Amino acid sequence: MTLQRAWSVRAAGLAAAALLLQGCVSYTPAVYGPIGAEVPYGFKDRPNPDGGHTILVIMAGFQTVADLRGFFDRRAAELCPAGVERSNVFRVQANEYFSSAPYVQGGAGIGSRSRQGVELEGYVYCKPPAASPAG
Image 1 (tube, rainbow, N blue to C red):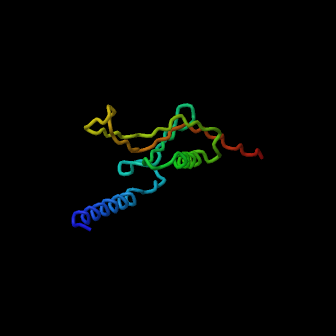
Image 2 (tube, rainbow, N blue to C red):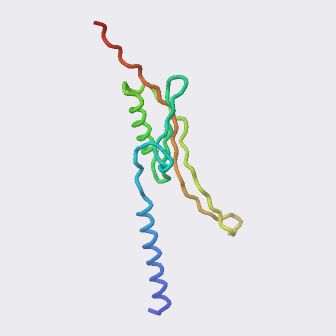
Image 3 (tube, rainbow, N blue to C red):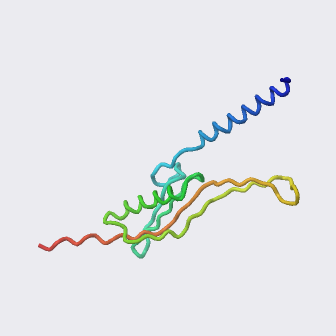
């Protein structure tokens, strides 16, 4: 093996190791909790004039819709101790970043797209509290 080829193999190995480490370090499961100044992922809610609540769930780009819905349902159960009468998810959105390359190959632009975050937003309406027996 020539010296140049040995350095190429070493460089490719180091690049692969760096990508693997980056993948391991950047994957952090979402922690259930409210969104704040220091916490970019979680939930945020507000009461509506019609008696319901609007819940917004924001997570990192690698999270699934099932993860988002799990946070949504968990927060809905906390807001509605007597149970959820109905809910309506009206928005699921993936925020993407597109980085275009400075060259054109074959007439088509080349670039890279990555998911930066996912959001789910919806309404929740609670069941009325159970009436206490008269006695």
